[in-house]
Length: 76
Length: 156
Image 1 (tube, rainbow over the protein chains, first blue to last red):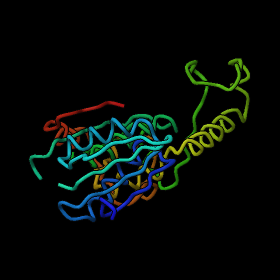
Image 2: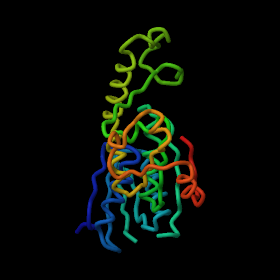
Image 3: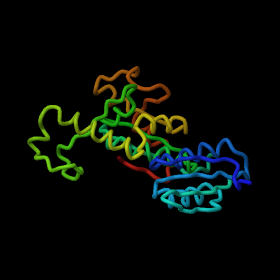
């Protein structure tokens, strides 16, 4: 079973689009749900960390695999 | 949310490259929960036109990365600006950088308040109908009404 409720593929997108798309997707989710984001922008690692700290949404996991970055964010 | 942080930006430039900072920062700030306003004045007004015709010029910008060195006199030839603009746009597309149109639309969706400087609209003989819908027109006092309460204020 997947450990997330929704998935957003932001591959190929550059700053600030992954963050903006993630925010938009989170808006349509309910509190406690988990969003998985896939990105290829190396800057997104720091950006999602900063996004989580500033918005209160929890960054559960941040991993890199084969040039892709995966994030799990739990909606506040 | 009156206790949200506030970001005030003045956008004064109307070239393709300088269109990015205000729209990137404003859309991102909104995603982070900021109340955001951009005041567009002088050449920055071009960023609010219905039809965006933004160009980038290598002239007077020795820092612009070029595929090969191009002497300034060649850069000044007719058509060079259009060539540089299409090269820049192609590169941005290839790298997954959003278009200015897209970023502007994201700002509008995120309820970033866009204010056009009425004085410079008059100065350049622009008409309100030249600009996209949903923007406001105002002057310096309008800017300070918001900027005076801002946490971050940027002049771009």
